[in-house]
Amino acid sequence: MPKKKGKGKKVEMATDPVALKPFGVCVNDIIQTPLGVEATVVGLDVGAGVLHLKWPGDITSPMPSKCKSKADMEAFGYVRKGQWGHIQRSLDERSNMVFQHKFYGGPMPKTAALKLPQPGGVNLEWSSGEGRPKTAPVS
Image (cartoon, rainbow, N blue to C red; front, top):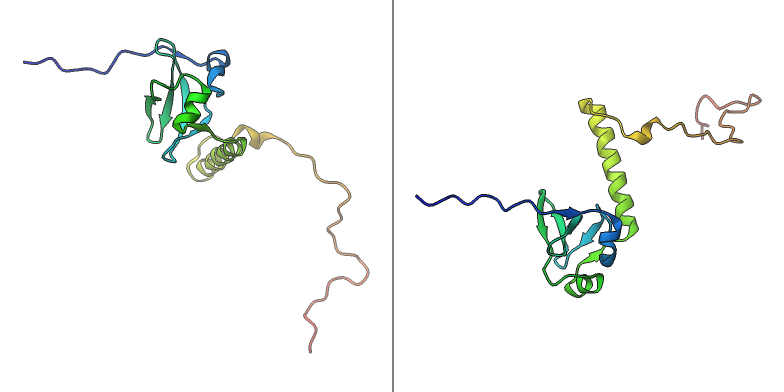
């Protein structure tokens, strides 16, 4: 009976900024691929020197083996998404956490505990003189 193939051995990943500096990315950065799919940086394979990405559906795979620097990545069409994309992802994660808390009892985001100051100098009350009309004027 033939032996079953198991999954490959664990790959040693470097996640520190110094190791990822040649690629111009950090862990959890969003990478726009040539086909338009967005992937997230997982780390750098120390042995092969190849960047690993996490694709939609929680699939992790390496980039092409010829991508050894930022210039190589851009030549293949892999580009780090702008800061606006990272901010939008944070906002989406926060709104999802608020939804999960409201409807399913999940944890609130850390930013929900912040007490923001009220703006000063704004008077939203009606003046006591005339007051607000009770009905619309008759024409």
